[in-house]
Length: 315
Image (cartoon, rainbow, N blue to C red; front, top):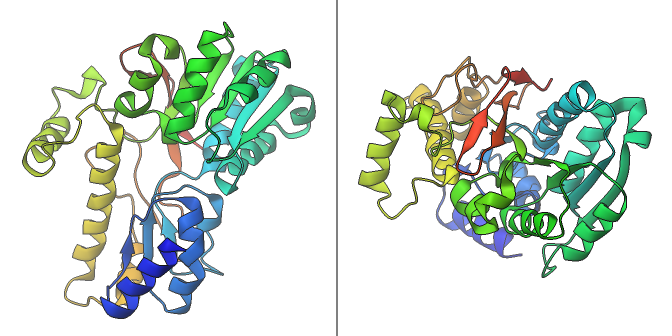
């Protein structure tokens, strides 16, 4: 209700040109129809639900990051290739966000999904812990775990999995991989070996620290976000999404109408940005509202995430 209230105020009272990078699946869903009915661009929203890539029904809404089913399919592809005898447990948030991961995993596993996925447990964002869910998943005999959760519950899950002595091959959704916001609060030693996927450069990965792109980001942080944590990947996320918005505004020139902004947002071709991983670029079209379609697997070593393998397309 609060999202609807403040969005209507911005559109009707403040007369904003567009909405940019609003956070959350449920909150963006609450205003999607309103913004589309009023032809207000809802751009590069901070949620990877599959439903945002729907130009036919919602031509004014576009996400930015790889969508959740695409990411889950990448994990499924790795499991099929490297862990063919996997018994998979899934912990997921009980909404579109969590279900997208579960559905994407099932889609990639295909006719093997029924046999390979041995247990699922959901949680509500109002739950105090996920302890009972983790214990139930361990009891299933699973040797692989996929956690599709927001940072708070990911931290709780990592901690509980470790503390009960369960050692599955552990996959973590990319939403919740920040070293500062997730891995350190969970206890970095408890996350060693966890696998995830990335599309941005992780600011704690030393391989980037001598590059001009990282130094430019660091200088930007010191000037414009001095209280921000340079170990927090969300500060890279904000920086790169903002650069995408800047590219659209520059392409719009002096014709800053909502129609032209949307036209430019749907006409990005192989846009490379400094803190995206090498080999990953942004492309959109009038019938393709998924700007980023590639990711690379990574593994946590107790200090940072280490990339491995090739950049993978989730299409």
